[in-house]
Image (cartoon, rainbow, N blue to C red; front, side, top):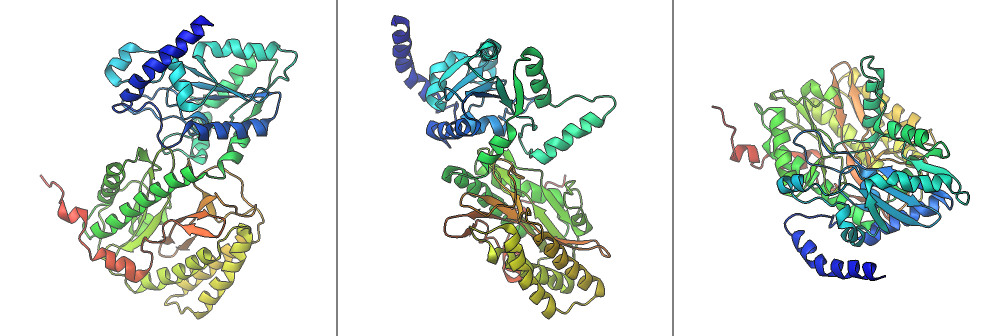
Length: 486
């Protein structure tokens, strides 16, 4: 009793010093209070039920001179940004135990403080977890669960590859598949290796996938999560608007990437949500073209799709505009038709209905737009009809989505097909293609479902032809700060 009392007294005495140090080097997020992380963990306990435990592996130390960034899955549950950490969630006791490394004083003397097991009381106060131990004690604690006759031996851990900086699950799975297909590599994923290690060391456990549980919880965003997504969306929109102003013939694609990065980092972003897609001319035919090396020409049509990572939350916004600032005849014709169809989708989005129903309603408006539009080329009319028919076929699928979810990942986790509910966040991004001329047209906006309707976070960013042309008449950053040509 005396030793515990002494620890509490020392913690109270030292806490002001620790918190004062946060003014220089923040140890913990200011975006979420410990109560929100605790509420997320409480939902995990509700989902997994009594008799099960879950263990989540945090991100490792980065390679090279790269700032550490925690994995989305780990951060979502506790907010701790220390490398090589583990979180154990006990569904029976509804108890969270964090395992972190011991202090490395030599590294801290060079890089600054990192939360370690020596900060156990501070970590509990910041994150709301119940206990903190050194990473080496995880095996001992798991062995207690494994040999307990009172506790069912089901252990959950994520099977899906962890999401990190500029990483959505689809991209992470592709990377795992590429490594597995390499005859000179073939390494398992980090998650696969961890799950296999658990099976080898503790064959008493029935190892199950924890990813579906986390995916379900992440689908509905809290007000604080939506606030971060909204900031990321605003910064994306500000960057696209500044890129519109700066675009002119002779500018290289990478220069617009630089403009956007300035906007992001000047306003507190911690990185890219994904690599910039700045595609002029026929480069836009490739939806994820990212080289950014081409010099833009008079008459080009430009696609720019780019967003930042703000406090572990992303956005995804796309706009298109003419490089010379004025829509020519074919751009006005095809983009004008596409825009009318695109806005028909936005008009019908609302809570309580499925994406399939929204698409079916939007297709009726698209049919009307198709009937009254006169196209200058047969290829354009074929492309427009195919665009509408593709959307019609998609609307017939009851498990369809409107675009993709957005949240901690740009292509966020979650299933499709259920009615839209408050707290869901997603984009729409239908594409019109003219293969004969390699023309590709796409817009993308971020939508938040509320109890009363749909909040289009990007509705102030010009997408109409007059609005885009007006913005492009304004002086841009690249004109005020010309490149160094020496």
